[in-house]
Length: 622
Image (cartoon, rainbow, N blue to C red; front, side, top):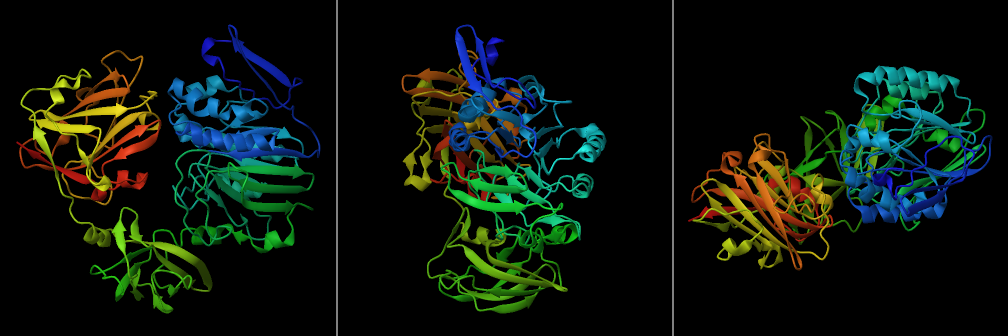
């Protein structure tokens, strides 16, 4: 076995006569076991989970929970790691954390968008067929893996799926792919709804389990009118940063859960139980199915929706905002406008207070959506602050929407404040002076030239000094970071998952509510093994930036490391490198993927990275 496979025990089989294996290189050996595929209606347990990328310790916690279930096999529904084209990340982000179950179970992977071109993916996993879409049997169940990214082969995969399902005689059928067909929170994906979904419905598939959006969602049964419905599940809680859950009338329970989790399935003849569990075994959700004469028990069918209705209702409550014409004073009763999101014009909406203890007080009111919104009245809490995440306390509403003959209810939604309202609450930040450096900085990891430059303050931490220094010259911005770190972890191709200094710049200081052409993210990381004076550099959201012109160097220190970087003036336009220029700025220093210093906030809230209005500011001074 090649040396680079050392420590990676990868066992993928459908039918095999052995149950224990050894894999090794030189004197090092990894041992493990697995169960061979059973035939017939024998009881067995399996697990499906996904989106394990970026944070190995979070992933390991989930894998330890999976291992405790002792599954016959595990399906990972994609995004195993942050960048599948970087060999070193495979071991660090996936195989090492997954060893608790890899040492005793079979793994069936699904390609996600982060697996990239699938070169390493195909090299590491020995899968059937073309290795991107395939099927296998276990017990009285049939399992199908599809690939969202086959491109020109999409029609070929669809034909293969039809043929595979036509030959399927199993009692239960499970389908896995990465990007969901039904999904509310996160990406709101709708992959394959016009071509693949009808085929899955036609052939009576039981479960479709996906990932991509980092949360848990189970939908009410959905299918063609008069036929057995499908159970759609989004399971993206394998370790990646979780996304907020969003309510929808087609979600079981009305809303998903933003939690680390995995889905364990217990299959025994005509009975299937799915339990969504947290890493500690806590139950998030449970569904029991009994399948006889090709369909489910009556209480499951009674909750089903036909596919067209489900599509119509799916995003009913996503994107609802509230806009105030003026900054509402605490304790006052004010008029506001509900910006309706996906609620159709002409709908009659009943707004009510979701619970007696809700902070915003709302009399029950009935309004009609006209031109995308409706006016209503609400009493502002006695204490209110508005910042990165909107209102605190949050503005919660109970909604009942009547659209023609249909009525949809959300017991509780969190309405976001409109961008215009947030901008009124957030004062322009006090700029931090960035001094001019007469002598050009040599990027060599030596901070002697920075002796006269004061560290940047952290405004949210009582202006405590940070590890960052910043100065300017006519040719651009120069920066330095002095990080304390007892173990340098490098991942130049995915720096935010390891040790990294990130700089976010809004060049026109427009205080935008989202990224624009004038915002950019620069990530600088120490890179042991890349040469004494070289470091990892990654640029995002900046079409004008020529990476060759952005420089960074690093050096090890007794208690950590030093980074020096340069961002050339030509990539910072329209900002001019002259005294008086204002630039929006945010920075973050991460240790092993966890932010330890942030300019704009003392909270680990990634939403601020994408929201320039919440960033601080610097003024070039001379």
